[in-house]
Length: 116
Image 1 (cartoon, rainbow, N blue to C red):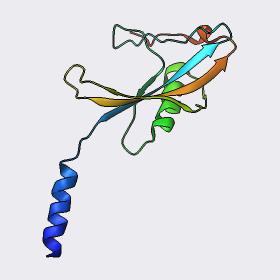
Image 2 (cartoon, rainbow, N blue to C red; image 1 turned 90 degrees about the vertical axis):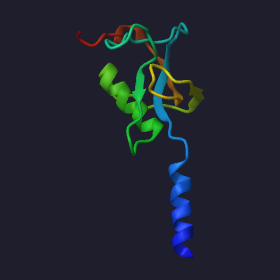
Image 3 (tube, helix red, strand yellow; image 1 turned 90 degrees about the horizontal axis):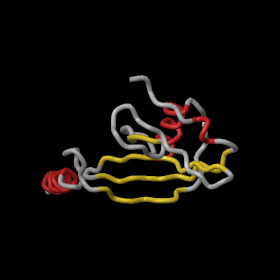
Image 4 (tube, one colour; image 1 turned 60 degrees about the horizontal axis):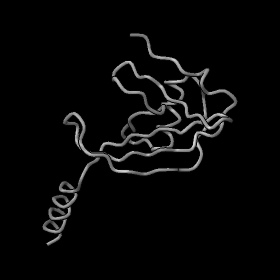
């Protein structure tokens, strides 16, 4: 009997949805302008951030991505947005987290593109 319960539980868990997760930060300056970055791998500008890795929280992923993209160790504040995003480029749907990156003196100076 226990084996049947374990197998049913395993089957149930395998049937649960798996979502890709991405995390980013909304960083503003005193004038209310929002920092956007131009990724080298896509045509659109966006807030700094990226994909959450296995075993990583969304907040930790956001701080890691800020360090990778901006070269700055910035702590993130509270969660501002949690949203579902439909499938893009056949990668499946996912969950997006946007954290408060705070107000900085001059975030526009930080903008830089990765080398192409």
